[in-house]
Image (cartoon, rainbow, N blue to C red; front, side, top):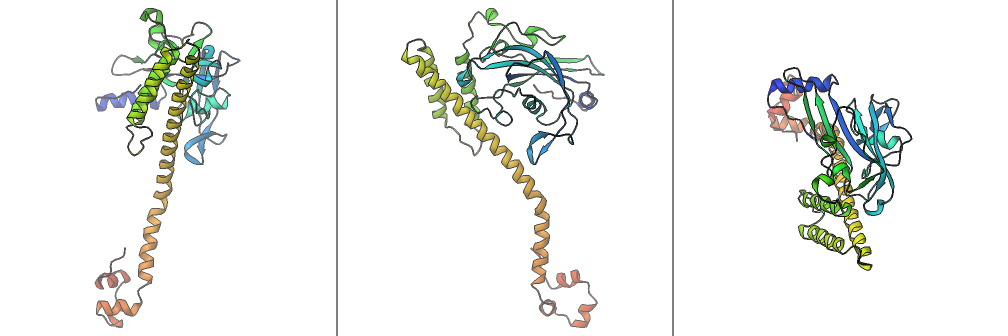
Length: 326
């Protein structure tokens, strides 16, 4: 979910809400394990982890605060994670540190499903962290309140809740969870939804410049195979093939996403490392060039005598000689 201001006045109003920490941000995360609490607050401080892209928990870091409420406890129902305990959490960050929610969840032993960096989960085709809702108390207009529900209903294609999903105060089920499968008049099929999402992810991955992780043909072959196998589920041997095809897809997209993230991190680090010494290198080049010129060579090229040259500043002398530093 993104907020885009259409005027300078609106932008100032929105910025004020975030600057003064008046914005109410609601995130949803699918995490591993079942918390022993119903609600808590995490205030672990965060700082860079040596690598500019990654962060770590440290007492010397910047303040970071996240309120957490358990929405539901249940199990995962997709791929190699099927049957593993998981929970749906509502997260309310009061600060906006980089990777704050991912790092807080991981630090408290409930890492986010699909987070390759902090959970080292390379089996899922995406990370299940979602900006679910935002409320801004604007001064120049009515409060702005928007939501983007979890689809299908409560992420039921990957998560089987052990009961009804608890909602944050002030929000309705249709705002945060979307229409239920009963309302839609259909049965949510977890594997097929997962394969469909993976297919959508494949389309994006095949179009990343310079990173042809999968060709369009390969992506279509994977998804077609999965759908064909899923239709045969329940026919003995074909059922295991279906599961195998699905796992193969999830693993492929998980590896592709991991590779893309690693490439992005490497690029950020490379830029940071190159920017700092660039000016120093150029300066060293100029000094190195001038050091190769003997005083006599410069005087001769400038057509000057030693007495005249003594009255000139070094820079003027070099310029008159027509010598250009690299």
